[in-house]
Image (cartoon, rainbow, N blue to C red; front, side, top):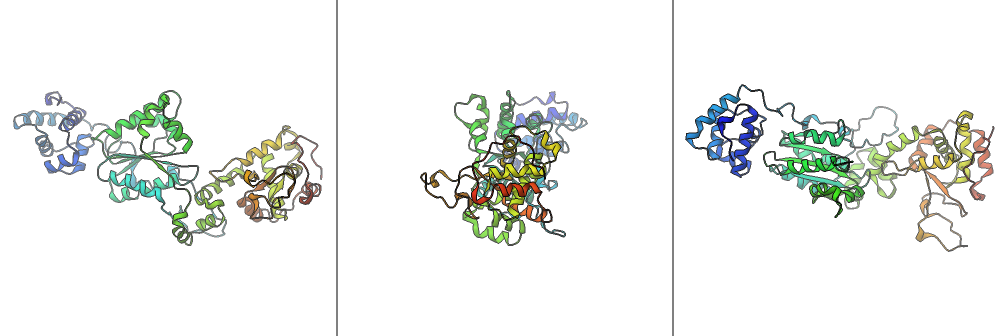
Length: 483
């Protein structure tokens, strides 16, 4: 039912009346705007209360929507009553989000910081390495392109850690920046779901809603996530607010939890996410030439291309800073294990480091006070810390595991471990072996080049030479080796 103009007293009342009128008309913004000879953005802002129209503009729109000449006087009086009222919320300056042209820091939107090369002198490199589009970027571009025609849309990039999901979303903003007039809203304070619930209803047209790590908005205790999902559905279906673009990222296991059939706890999430998934393209096999060309202009990308295991370039770019942070902030026992591994490698030890060697050498890197407070399972705790993934790349010190299909029958000699074919190989003997991350190997050679390993390290190497390593001993506490 169209509102009675005699009940309009404020700008909020006028906005509500215009929304009802537009909804009853049923035509899209562009068609009504064309018929009324006003711009699409003017009509959109007027209907949604973000601008107060001049009377001649309002009269033209009212006439197109079927208001007769005899009713115009009442509407003109309503327009005059509403004018002195304060601008209806959300106003031009307090809508959710900021102008897109002001969003120039990719790290504020949680794009991973890339590796920093250890090169003396100032660097002229841009904050991000060159971007090489893959198949998923074409799919994402299609969604963004539809918003430029006035349609709301949502896209969620699905992929593992540090596979380039957030960077792809950042790059997808380029055509919106060029078009102008867009805003971006990243709800995260005080918590992501709370921030989303508080203002989703106020999001206006030409706004990007940035839902990085989408599961943190939708997979929450209680019904908060479902309420966020419902609010997203309402916003995307609201033609008065179109176009709105929702961009999200999520890991495959979280996607499975939120979209699995029969999971009533996430019924609304399943509905809003349906058809929005864009799987991240693994690797760069189909754009190898473009990747190599980009690497020729950026030393960070060149290093990642040369050193990343299995050509996992994006993981290397994002994971190495996390790897260094994990090393810098390691607890004493874990850092001792890393230093023992670093010194073993730079002193010429083979790639495969035995459990026995690490257990014997690491205590030499601890002070007596640090050693005295360790628990009986100190080595297991230290190795668990060093094994944790760092944004998709292996941790500082990880266990070598030959593939099951590559294990030979008992009694046969396996000269080289499948995981170490790039190096000297793993000794043919029982017990677990470990490897130092390649980047930390380089880091140790550079930053510990002038340091002589402690005497306890040499004693451990003498007791556990690589040519006759035995079964590992448990990580029990023992008297700390004294130099």
